[in-house]
Amino acid sequence: MTQMNNTRLGIILMIATTVVFAAQDGISRHLAGEYNVLMVVMVRYWFFAAFVIAVATRKAGGVRAAAKTEQPVLQIVRGTLLAAEICIMVAGFTILGLVESHAVFTCYPLLVAALSGPVLGEKVGWRRWAAIGVGFVGVLIILQPGLGVFDPAAIIPLVSAAMFALYGLLTRFASRRDSAATSFFWTGTVGAVAMTAVGVWFWEPMSTPDWGWMALLCVTGASGHFLLIKCYEVAEASAVQPFAYFQLVFASALGILVFGEVLETNVLVGATIIVAAGVFTVWRERQKKLSL
Image (tube, rainbow, N blue to C red; front, side, top):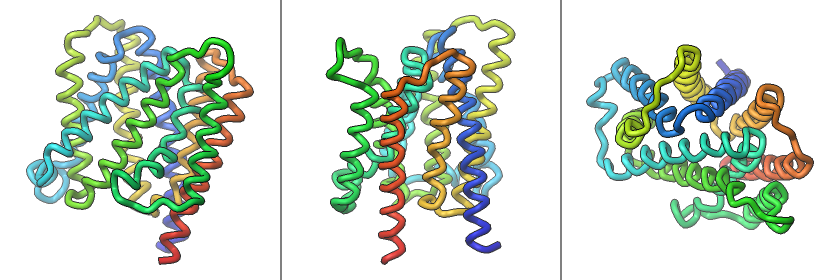
């Protein structure tokens, strides 16, 4: 298979991933609107942990090989950070809706670029710094902090984006000594332990239909991660990353069509600026790699 075919397949898989993750976000919004967020995320993590353990058993060396790491503290911090980020983002869905939450959250690649210097020691050139600045103009357009009474809840997806960006950088740092399979295993298992420790205290009885939605939430989570793994197996991350922004489109469509949300002009303009800046940073990173 040629690299072009790999890239084409990778793009298809990335778009499929965004569809599945958007559906997961829609289901999370519904369930978290009816039940405690911590409980919903806890059950989701139980299935996620079972999924990563099942994947590990099929690899050479089994679970023991997947769990082997020389940096357990870093892996625990990563897994806990992601679990906390998911809780905050899901809470944001119930407070702000899918449209506005995802519009702000799309700035996370810009945060990754901005933090890659102090966290990983990577050099960020003036062009990418300019793109980061432009992207945050888009965030300000969405949040409108200077107009009327500013709603502090509007920064929830920004906090979530910052946490997810830090998680991504810590994952990159961990990859210097651990394999992707090891990081994936620790992400699922640590998250399940952390969420069980807090979520079990907020258990609520669920209706039979909502147990069906919960089962679908678990399936979308596992299948989304599976598609993403396959995507990065067949194509370079820099080639497919711009297509991850389709999740904003699909999630916003769900928010408007299913939950009756409204796409405000400032959110559309701000999100467009953020996406354009994000695509530029990915393109610039790819150009730098090609020039080496």
